[in-house]
Image 1: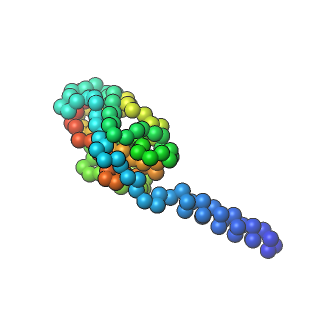
Image 2: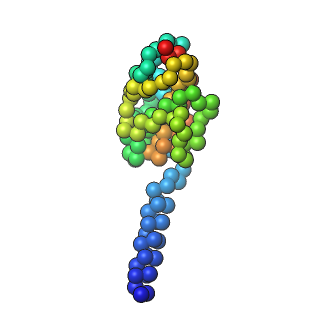
Length: 142
């Protein structure tokens, strides 16, 4: 009976060590001058849903989530957000995640006015230091 409990204890210890090593120890640094922006639609555009949103990035590269490569990240799109979300926890419904390294997306939006803003996340989905965040734009969906 002692042997199965001993093995279970070893497994649990190994699993907790694995979880701890996968957790972000600190934020990734962003390269000086890195800029993320929305190529299209433009601020003030009147659009139809789904909206094709094209992402732009200068001064760093795009890589899928989990990729451990300096000066890279992946896009997150904040829809109708008031402030930068806490990206170290589960993101809310207003944050669209593009962890595959996508540089554009077709997004369904309800009719009305919406704000759009891009946020670069590192391999752990955490904003870089300093954060690489686009200007917020407003679009109207017909």
